[in-house]
Length: 66
Image (cartoon, rainbow, N blue to C red; front, top):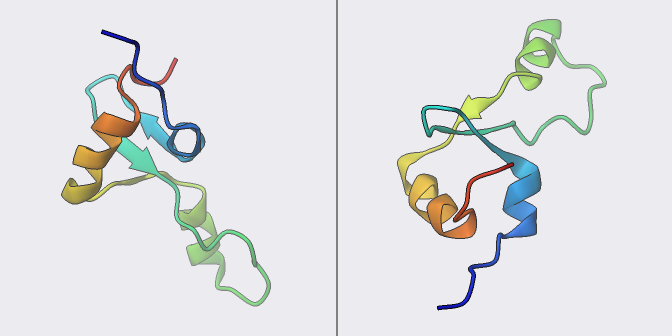
């Protein structure tokens, strides 16, 4: 059976923790002008993904991230 290929876009956008959770960053980080500072602080933090995304990410990232 051939090796499975990693989805390069998912590799750049998601992180996998040691316990197997998938984390993603919010997509509003491009324009930081006239935004409250509290929301700007939240942009730097990784957010857990939804349950539906996790199933797709297990296929897109078959070997995890190294």
